[in-house]
Length: 65
Image 1 (cartoon, rainbow, N blue to C red):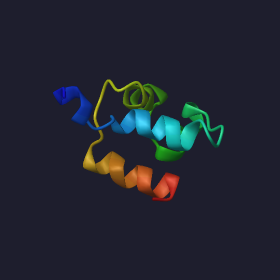
Image 2 (image 1 turned 30 degrees about the vertical axis):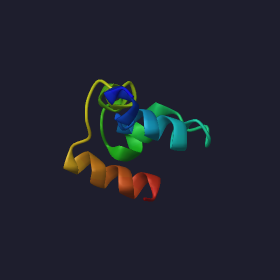
Image 3 (image 1 turned 135 degrees about the vertical axis):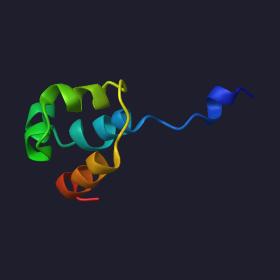
């Protein structure tokens, strides 16, 4: 077995698959609700940045988790 098999999914990919795609939410709409720039949110969705504690709190409020 490869170590890659145990690599957890990136939070951005998870958010995209579980919240945005099934509910047909646009990233710009969610970025506005999060009060962050669309580019900031897109970096997260495209797995180019991690989630800060502040972003985690915002996401929990906006996405209801």
